[in-house]
Figure 1 (cartoon, rainbow, N blue to C red):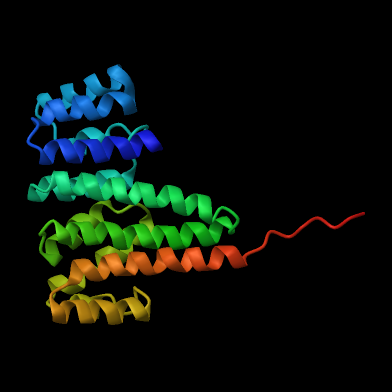
Figure 2: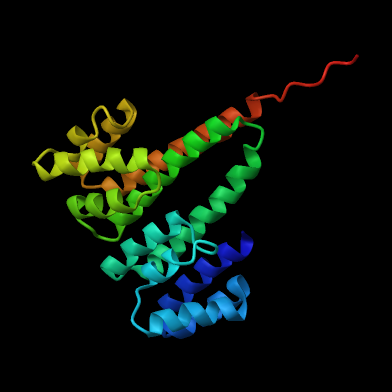
Length: 219
């Protein structure tokens, strides 16, 4: 997991510094995937495959979240920024998983799943994708059938001319709908989605210490 964070952080930093794409992948990839995995990655891209498609074909090293965010970077030329965002999110997830390990799995999976969705959609918007295009790509690539369906409904509503705030009504919680409405008015939608992710993150941090694992009674 630490090597995974290193890969994205290093790749982003090298690309920002102007290091050629394939060289950056080689340098960042070797500590994470070893020599053989890195060569396969570089070979695929040198033959014309996109980074998104190459990563998607290797689920051992690249999860759906990272692939989806990488797609946003490639669509907009913002891959260096996206790599940094993936590294930050992976780092947060490591800390969060350790901190809330005592919570029931159902609670963790639900809250962390929603947090990841807000964070990823924020990245799509930060990269400069218009809301309608971001929704189209996101609904096609977000993990989980329920989330795909939900974002598909939102995408259809926005395509009909509804605002995003109106489109998420009944799909997102009411507090999220209110913040999105404010974000649309202020032109700060990407910040709104990052704030929603932060809200869920801190909710989990607050809940975790209060949840005590029952102790075994003495016999």
